[in-house]
Image (cartoon, rainbow, N blue to C red; front, top):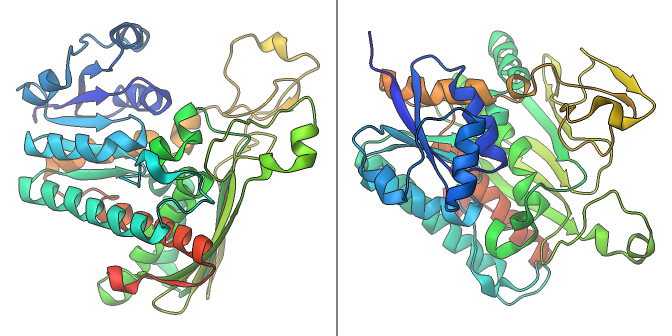
Amino acid sequence: MKKPVSVALIGTGFAANFHSSCYARAQGARLAGVYGRDPRRAADFAQRHRIDHVFKSLEEVLTSKEVDAIDICVPNHLHPELCIKAAQAGKHILCEKPLTGYFSPDTSAMIGKTVPKKVMLEKVMQQTAEVLDVTERAGVKFCYAENWVYAPPIQKANRLLAATNPAILRIVGGESHSGSHSEAAKQWAFSGGGSIMMKGCHPLGATLYLKGEEGRRRGGKPIRPATVVAEAARLTQVEAFVREEPKWIKTGWKDVEDWGAMLITFEDGTVAEISAGDTTLGGVRNFLEVYSSRARLHCNMSLNDSLLAYTPEGSVFGDEYIVEKTETKAGWSFPFPDEEWMNGYPQEIQDFVSAIADNRAPVCGGEVARGSALVIYGAYVAIEEGRRVDLRPWW
């Protein structure tokens, strides 16, 4: 019988909550402990999730012989350094999205030009290459935690596409809701971008995965994104919204966009349309449509109707969780019987653990991480310069 893969969880926020519960469902996994910068919060997290050990420092995590791998669930600007330190310590890595971004505090406003977006793109691609090169040289597994890749609708869509082997002509996808959980998401220095970065990365990651799989089926190598055009807006800054009260859409975005869209052309001439926003009421809207030569597929990862609930007064349900980002529990709602499973979190964790145990590449790794960074920052260049950006030089 194989020894369980022992994982240390880094972070105690929103993503860490999802990941923690999934380790209990994963075969061959052992959650060795948790580390957070705030000891009290880490202790509370450990108690709520029945984790036996709270690490006192990051150094303790990285030097522990009991830890095989680390699961990075911290704000975006901390990802690259933690990935590199973990690889150098010989620890396998599961890194929450995005892998990296441009986080310098001198970015000013997203629509400002203190640092040209072209410079940001160059820095991001250099850092992405550095992280992936270090992990490869260290011989550790790097799993990119793009849960959309693992979501059952996306995986089933990929199997249907494999069965018919069509040409994927067009993909349309989006993620939107009424605003991020994290205050760090509202400032470029911590998030590396706004809605395009924080929301658009999900449908983009799934799109890159499906086009990659299509390419491998056809010619043994992924079909890569060639160009991108994009647009962004700060909709919560428009005068009509600013004057309006009360507000159910989150405000306080400091220097990032709260809506964006990308139009991507792939090297085979096919296209993808990706939208993202923090200005949508009614809960999360996650979808991906695949238009192929032999089939049309619609992946709906939100607003399921397997369970419907109605109450005239939201307080009736008390503290019971309904669904992510819904503004009220009153009226009809769509409680997820298993939101983690539908969003691919248990499958993501299981693949990470199994890839380590079986010494194989994870389903989602450096290819999607690198491609996502390239397209997103290419989109920011396109927005700033008002032109189509050629991504091929970065291949």
